[in-house]
Image (cartoon, rainbow over all chains, first blue to last red; front, side, top):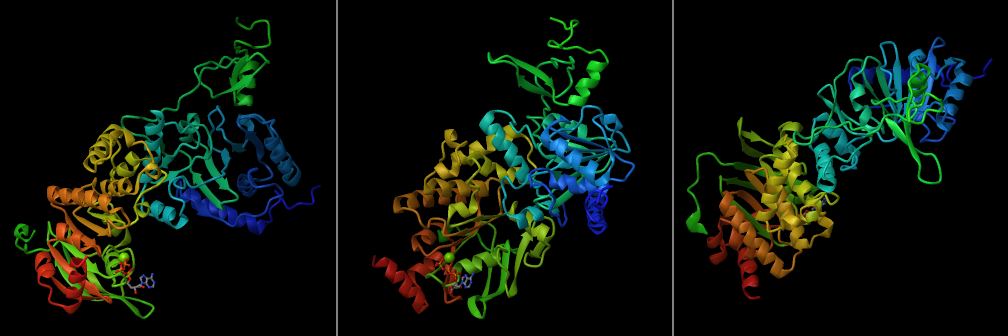
Length: 288
Length: 265
Ligand SMILES: Nc1ncnc2c1ncn2[C@@H]1O[C@H](COP(=O)(O)OP(=O)(O)OP(=O)(O)O)[C@@H](O)[C@H]1O
Ligand SMILES: [Mg+2]
């Protein structure tokens, strides 16, 4: 038996966080302030996401935690262990089996369904901060839908690089109203945000929660003559052969040898189990 | 300049009534009323601390007034008191029909954004979403303020004071505002740079038929730019009239002092 209250936070705190979540869902993309609590882990380790997850979990839930798409990184493992210990809930690495998925930097490749909740860890929730550091001013800009500045940022990108070089935390407009930072996911994942699952965003240090309800329109900002391009590496996965996934580049020897593999390890393993093979698959069937 | 003045039209662009502003009991400016007609440039002169900036900031809605009205001839609803209009409406006005040129360019520029981005911001703020068009307009405007196209991707931090001020002017005028507020637009610049900027401003004012309110304590500036003049002292307007009239035949003792002190230089 654990000595913790279920999922670590006390019921009073969870209620407060749930109220913020409900408000966030009612106003898609709007940043709701909440009284972020000290968690037994440093900021930058997903304290916002952890609090949101804690407020969502029920004893029947099955939790998956990923960091950059992988279930086995230190950050993901420690958060998963934290909830195993404090909530004694089931955990999984299988996207399809999870009811709650906490993530840092990725959306799983397997489409999420109704009944699932995706919780993002957010470092900086304010997309306008890059050009306008004053909080009073950015709040006003959101309230009055003054979003020209967001395009100034994209303009600067094109002026400097010839194209929109922002590739992470690419700003989106939610349901035609609030401009939102989707957390540092690759822009490749942006189109997936139009999904059937509930998406919740928690920023611990900044004390903000925001949400995208199921089936909400999420549009990546762009220019007419520089349309949004989710872009992907020009390779198939070297392990499972997938041509439609987000890939990590991995150095494999001292001679500059490289391979490209799905960043979503569960998805890649699932494909390999079904017999899909890539260029460097460690089996004899591997194609040359 | 007086020969160019158009006869007053029935509807002023801006109608200022009894502006009164104090700072904790001390007068900032008081009892100020005037009308500005389309295409007119009004100069506000006076010594340091006479309330020029206070008045301008009250008119532009940057600081709250104690009492008074600032009626502006809006496109859709005619004369509206901008001091009581809703904040979204006033902010919209501020980035469309109004422009404000600050004395210190860095107060009116985004120093971390390229020159082109600075000029493009107002366009994007009112919905421009075609990069090529925005850039073309930025090039055009930078050219009009004599900034080379090949500097458009540089940040204003790399510009001289005069260039920064010209950039600020381009950034303000790109949306074709109907009323421009300027607070000492040539202040803090070298004399030769001032002269060039003044020339440029005069060209733009004539070419665009701008209506403007220009605060300065440089009588050469108003001589060149302003159709009408308002002289302030200790927060009060002590004399108003056509620029040449006021400068050539000042009535108020303070204005006489102001004019003679300049002429003696
Ligand atoms: N924020 C403020 N708080 C208190 N008093 C102020 C403030 N701003 C201006 N004042 C006072 O109001 C009076 C008018 O100041 P203002 O800045 O409007 O003068 P000005 O004519 O623009 O002077 P300058 O030519 O030096 O710019 C001065 O007595 C000044 O000290
Ligand atoms: Mg001043």
